[in-house]
Amino acid sequence: MKRFSLKIRNSMKKKLILFTTMITILIVIGMSIVFFNQQKNLLETELSKRGISLAELLSRTSLKAVLTMNIPSLYEMINKIIEEEYVVYAIILDNSGKVIMHNQPNEVGKVYTDQLTTEALITDKSYSKCLIQDGRHIHDVVAPIILEDVRMGTIRIGYSYVAVDAKIHRMIMITIILAITFILSGMICSMIFSKFILKPVKLLQEAIEEVSKGDLNIVADVKSTDEIGNLAISFNKMVKDLKSSHDELVLAKNYNENIFNSMINSLIIISLDGIIQSVNPATCAFLNYEKNELIGTPFSKILKEESLIKKYKIDDLTTKVFTRIMEKTYHTKDGRKIPVNFSSSLIRDINGKTQGIVYIAQDITERKKMEEELKKLANFDSLTGSYSRGYGLNLLDHQSKLAKRNKSPLLLAYIDIDNFKNINDTFGHKEGDRVLKEVVKVLKAILREIDIICRMGGDEFLLIFPDSSLKDSSIIKERLNKGLTKLNQILKKPYKIDLSIGLSEYHPGNPQPIDELIRIADERMYKEKKSVANKNIIYNLKIE
Image (cartoon, rainbow, N blue to C red):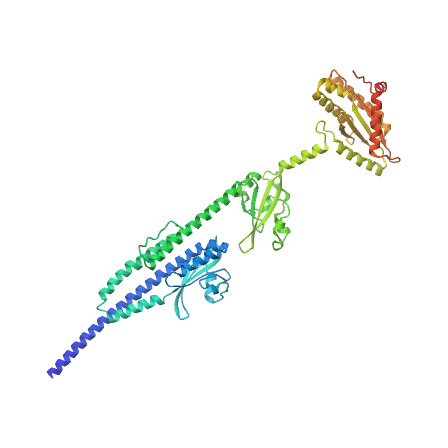
C-alpha cells in the first residue's frame, strides 16, 4: 500500500505537476492568444487606418489623372498600390460603377452592380469593410474622388489577411507547443514587433494623417529596409509627386487668374439660369460696378434684352451659335449705354455637360465714334459742313423722284464765288477757306430747312429747292443779295464777296435727266459770270 500510495502520490504529483503545467500552459496559451488577438486587432486597426489614408491619398493623387483620363498615370498608380504587401486588388471606378482602372486589365471597362459597389458609390466618406471573397478574408477600403464637392469617382483597395492570419496562427501554435520555453522569447518578440512594426506603422499613419490635412511637406522617416520601409519610401515618393502636382495646379490656377484679371475686355461667367457667377476687374471698371454688386445678380442687369438662355434651349445650342460675334449694348451702373462686340461660349465639364456660359465683350465706343466721323466725312464737306458732292447728288436724285411722284417742281441753283482765285492768291488759302465757310453761313441763313446745300468742288455749290420753280428765282436772288451785302459790311475786307448763279428747273410734265439740269444751271452760271452789267442789276454788287 505504501508503494501504491507512493505510486498514488507520485501519480497525483505527476498529475498535479501536469495539471499545474497544463494550467500554466493554458494560462500562457490563453494569455498568448489574448495577446496575439490584441496584436491582430491592433494590426487590423492600423492597417485599416493606413489603408483608408492611403486610399484617400490615392484619390487626391489620381484626381488630375482621372480628370484628364491619363491612363498611363492611373496604371502606374495602380501598380504601385498592388505591389504593397497584402494588397489583393486596386480599383478606380467612375460614378456609374464603370471600372476606369484595375490591377487586372481584363476588368477595365466592366460595370460593377453588386451591392458592395453600390454602397461604395453612394458614400461621400472613406470607410473600410471586412468581407469574404473567394474564401479569402478581405479588408475592402473605399475612398471617394472629390473635386470641389463634386464626386468624380471612387477608389477601392482590398487587403488580404491570409498572410496575417497564418502568421498569427503559426505563432499561437508555437506558443502552445513551446509556451513556457518561449514566453521570454515571446516577450522579446513582442517588444521587437512593437519597435519595428507598430512604431513604423504608427509613424507612417501619423504622416498620412498630416498629408490628409493638407501638409505636403511631410516625410515619413522610417529607417527600415523591410516592407514597411518600402511602403514609407513609396509614401514619400507619392507625397513628393502629389506636391509637384499640387504646385503645378497652383501655378496653372495663378496663371489663369492672372490672365483673367489682366484682360482688357469684359469677361462674365453666368450659370445656366442666367445668374452672374464671376466677373473680371475690367468688367467692374467697364460698367462702373463693384464686384459684389454683380455677383449673384441676373445677367439681364447688364444686357437688357431677351436672354440667350431663354431664347434657345440649352440642349439645342451648338458651339458655333455661341461663339459668333455680335454687336450688343451693355448698360452701366450710371445708366450709360456702351456698344460692345459681344461673343460667348459654353463651359462644359469633362463629360461634355454644359455648366455655364462665358461672355466676352469689347468696348467699341471709339470705333463707333470713328464710324460716325467717317460717315460724316463721306456725307459732309469737312470744311464748310455742307453736303459732299456724292451725297448731294444722291439727294438730288431722291428729290427728283419725289417731284415726279408728287408732280411738283424742283429748282436747282449752281453757284460760284467770283474772283475766288484772286482771293486765294492774294490773301492765302486760309483766307479763301474762310470765304467758303462764310458763304455757306449766308446760304444756310437765307434758305429753308428743306433746301439742300452741297459743295461740288472748289468754290462751286449746288442748291436744291424742293417744291420751287423759276418763278421763285427773284426771291432767292434778292435774299442772297441781302445776305452778301450784310456779310461784306460785317467783314470789311479789302475785297468783296460776290456770287454768280445759274438756275434750272425740273418739271414733272417735261422731265429731264439730272445731269442735264446741272449742265443747264452751270452754263447759265458761267453766262451770268461774264455778264457784269447783268450782275450789277441783279445783285447790286461790284467786284473790286
